[in-house]
Length: 301
Image (cartoon, rainbow, N blue to C red; front, side, top):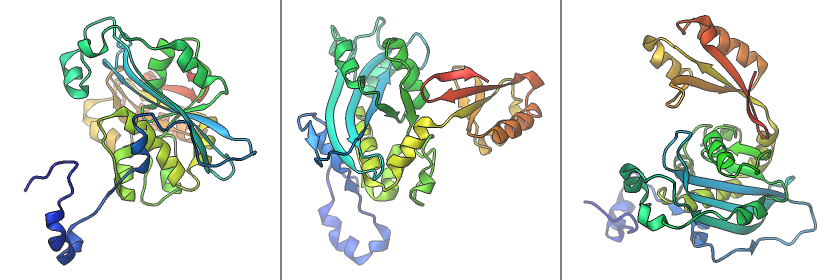
């Protein structure tokens, strides 16, 4: 029997009671009730202690290439106490759309509901977004480097901030043994017993924020990640027959560069991965290493 997404099947309660091992109940993530933005500013605690500000950022773009552009942008400004990790406030939310220079591809409209007509005449307000950045917040996104590239191309003067990819840069397994680094936000929430509508980036930003307020130690790990230097090891011209081996070893495919890459965090890991890849690529010099600094972005090692 099929059920509506937002409808809990109360008629199944007798069966759930009889066979609880066959069912699992998930709770809606609490912060999703703030998605309309009318609740902010929301102060959880008045404190004289200095707080660290964050901006949780999500976006929808017309594609992944350099000439593509941002269609929808959400930024949620909040503050946490750096020592205890306690959330102090959710200060503001900016949720805006912008009409692109070119027609929105039909498959993007189908996936997002954003059409040329719905965003016609709309544009981002630079001053509104710049006002969120005046106290040097840590920017957190589930899209990481990709979001940073699009944001800095669109707002070229808003560079030099610390960026953290909340999916890959945070060592989730050190915070809660039910979680793992690299797991999508929706999967992490389900493992904790919660759910949200994954088709709205407003909810994605708020849920990401909630996750750090919910899990003790996660904010401190987020702050550490914002100052951590990591490396991207790229494997150009990797032989086709080693594709599955690379995937098993933690490499991901980059469609734009058409090569494999992996995040590593120490010089020892860089050396080990470089030696490993030189055996898997058609030419030894096809292995490249880039340094990913949370403030400076990517630079060649």
